[in-house]
Length: 166
Image 1 (cartoon, one colour):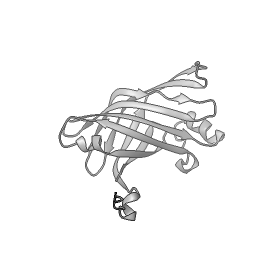
Image 2 (tube, helix red, strand yellow):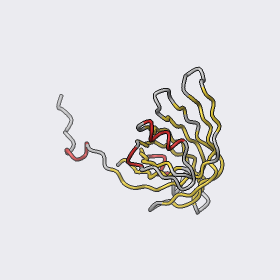
Image 3 (tube, rainbow, N blue to C red):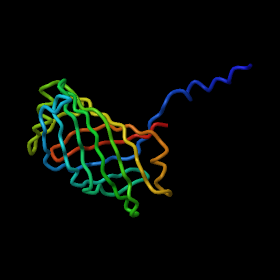
Image 4 (spheres, rainbow, N blue to C red):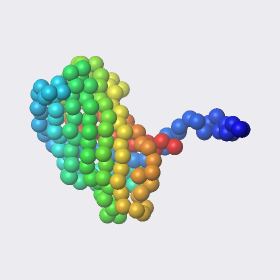
C-alpha cells in the first residue's frame, strides 16, 4: 500500500483573514453567587450594537445575551447567544464561547468599569470561538468556516474582531 502524498508544508499551517468587528452594547447584569458548580453565574442582556467587515454590515439585535460563569480561579467563561441582522435583512444567529482572564487587579477593573474608565486590552486575555446559523444564500459562508475572536471590554460593552481560519 502506498502512503498518501504529503501536502505542501504551508498547507498545514492555518492562516487568519479578518471577517468583521462587532461592537456590543450590554445591559446591567444579574449575578448569582455560589451556585453548585462554584464561583458565580451571571446574566448579561445584549442591548444591541453593530457589526461591519468586508462582506458583512448590520446591527446586533436586542434578542439574546451572555451567560458567563465566573470561576473560582477568576476566569470569566462566557457563552453568548444573540441575533444580528445584516443590512440586506438577513438574520444571523451567533453563539460565542470563550475566556477572559488576567491578573486579579485587571479583572477587578474590568468588572467595575465606570464611565470614562479604560483598561488596556493587552493586559488581559479575551478570546472566543463563535458559530453561526444563517439561511442559505449570500451569508451562509459563515456556517462553513471556523472563526476566532479577539476582544476587549469597554465601558458600554464588548468589541470583538473576528477572523476566519483559512
